[in-house]
Image (cartoon, rainbow, N blue to C red):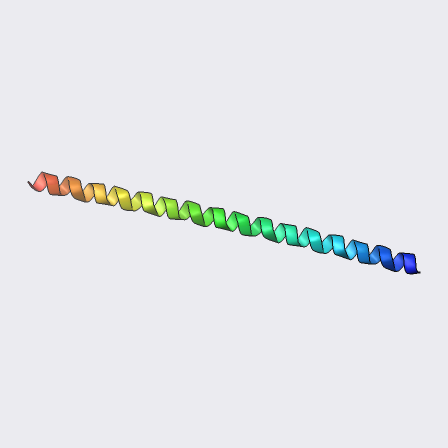
Length: 60
């Protein structure tokens, strides 16, 4: 009986570890996505700025 209990405990621990790893991976993925989005936004802003400058130049 004791052996069985030990085995069960080990299995539970392993499962918990796996879950934790999965959660960490998910978090990392989310962070990466956020970073990508931020980069895209920055690029868009830069493009808008350039367009504004071009229009200003055309005015002159």
